[in-house]
Length: 186
Figure 1 (cartoon, rainbow, N blue to C red):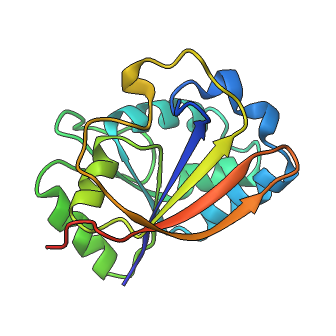
Figure 2 (tube, rainbow, N blue to C red; figure 1 turned 90 degrees about the vertical axis):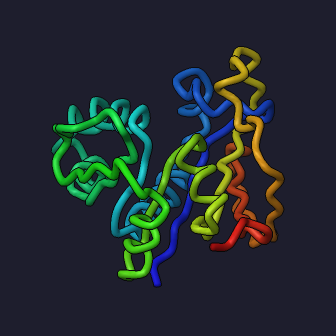
Figure 3 (cartoon, one colour; figure 1 turned 180 degrees about the vertical axis):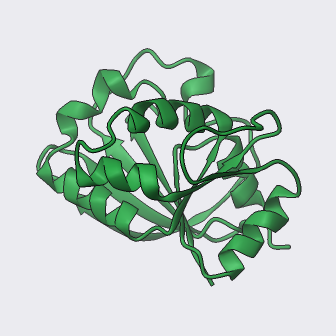
């Protein structure tokens, strides 16, 4: 059975969307190593259309720059979307219907999936008992500019988690690891 890990980068005030303003000054050698290990442990990525569009533009333009960019470009990608029909980023498959069942099948095949960010796809995974680990990359900064749609919190069902551990970096960035405990099980 594969595992689905969600890695969400956020600020102390819950901003998960304005990374250009706060992320990079905390991304040290330790963070680079953690991010590289996290990506190396994944067999594929899973994302929604908006993340796909942002990642596709950013990572395809960095092809050949470093091993991380090359891995992002070559890894299998699953995009949950009802509007994307012809993905241009290499090695991409669109999941447009029966999402929970399709993802369950991917997990059952032994595929380890990595998801960046927390949105509709994350909530769907959580609600269907498919998310195995939530990693919050908590940055020691208050963004002060996130709109409600750019915050981790959104109206959703309550979900409880079991604490797995923490990784503390010299820059003050911490990576918190949790396992969902009360996600709905099919």
